Length: 304
Image (cartoon, helix red, strand yellow):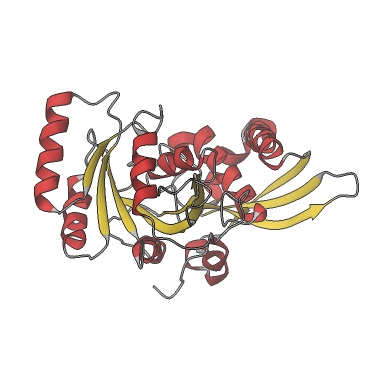
């Protein structure tokens, strides 16, 4: 007697998505979930804390731990981010190693392969950006990495265009154990709306200022208030490390911060399904990356 879909038990498991900075991990998590749950940017190390995306596949719930890129840490913030990445891999039912075959970032990829080699979790290798990578070097890289670590399968995808993503999702769902769902059917992330709002603004900060603003900036949530008219009022603080960066963020006559706010507000309104009033202000704090409170807001361990 064959089981019908209605008779099948629910499945639920955790997949840690790891890799070097800028491999496309957040883009993949968004593609698997089917909507935006993690911010993306061309800037390396955009993801700072471990964030969970929740993807559904039939009766299977796949909890995706979108982790910060794993790299050689220099500062307290770097150490906390790398610790969060490995924490995301603890007790995962499967680990996806995501590799950008064009940049590769060998200095970060090689130690990562060494660390993965003896881990007990089931491991999948995902080579990203196949839509722009050359075929021969891509196949050669896949063979080389497959010899370094015992992967269950190797997948060739483009997280941006979606090529190969459904096949990868099928494979991940098949690896998940039987169990009750950890999240309601309509929940796509474990991030609070307050934190997600701060992340959306940080994404616009990176997107609009490109290389003008160094990596050492943060967006801190100050208040998140539901108004009686059904709209939401959000107040946030953009924290930068030096006085000289303030004119860059503000722009001439406040034009840049206004543009950042407008873009973030528009995206948040769409994401939250309600009108958003967003208020931003800039604060200079030279040692914000050593501030325990900031770490806690990001979900990072300050003691690392």
